[in-house]
Image (cartoon, rainbow, N blue to C red):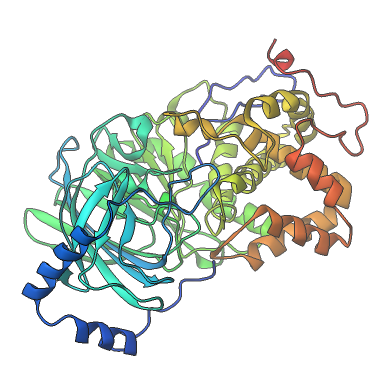
Length: 521
């Protein structure tokens, strides 16, 4: 997630170590005229009868309570009983970023259990109507759940399309996530649990899906979203822009940008389309940074293998978020990262690589639960530090030694890397503590010291290849590390990932972790 923008400390002995800022590929939907659909059609005789039936069914069921899939950190996030295959999201923007957008979200879902009701995550918007396979359905809210009661129960194995007509409200504190108001429009920052502030969804990274966005906006604005362009229709005063992903995506990685923007195109390794989005007035000022992206891509591919998606680019927004964000195929950056002269060139370069590295670690290979967050941020911080070491002479070893000195304090504050403490109530961004950044990169450094550089490099490539377009857990990573290295690493991972204290650093018996709070004095 976010790499927090922070003031650099070039005089630091660790080389300006910055503190951090706060399952398989998508399957084709079963045919619409299959046995389950025909059986459903038999049950639903007429729209009038069905609409009445939906109300009767809803009235006959007990009051709904918020559900969740039991994520240790976000227990009410996500919903049991179905798998989202695809989202089709229509957004209509008036041109004023303090007004709610009109929206229609269609979810193509496959039931994995018999369902009398279907829960969606959704809040901060008004729902005007819901249909299931085109038939009106009853709906009500419970906590941050939108509870849909279809006219007829949904059978396990049955595909259905749920259509929600709603508003999507960009107002409210930016710290809550979801829409980000920029100086010229809107962008999105949905991590970790804010996509459902924008559109109804199964808002958990374990349920990835295909996405199609249709954004209608005044014709003097430009709309961009994840994936590749799939059409543009001019209507005079307004224009509708369509984008579609070619790979499954977690809801927290969705991105839509609307503003007075220019889209710049260039070519990356192996002909990869690279597109960057900047305010038109910033085009020349940002070009020296944007033209670095193909080189960043080439460097990352040299470390872990081919880039996993259909396109990549940088979205530079004139907004204050306090972080950068790895939204899939189009990473979000604050403009000030590139304009604040307190940030050295090498630092900005390495932050760009941090968000790019997430396209492999966190986007293509998504966490099974939010407790697996260290796999995202630890790897992105690792490649950020390695890039600074190889291209700017900012010693990786010195950065890791400084992280080691702080590690016990980080664990005391936020828990061990693979068992992080829940975020502070009302401050979801507090999940992104130092222990999941350099504290987790430190685990990877210790692993490389233990199994050797050659085995570590094979592990990294195998990891992103084996789990591409899917989700994976800490247990999956530790098992693969043992397989690749041919070693029993149970004791190593028990201490480094779950221990309250930081184990001794292999190969560096002189390294010391200071008592909590001592590293800050």
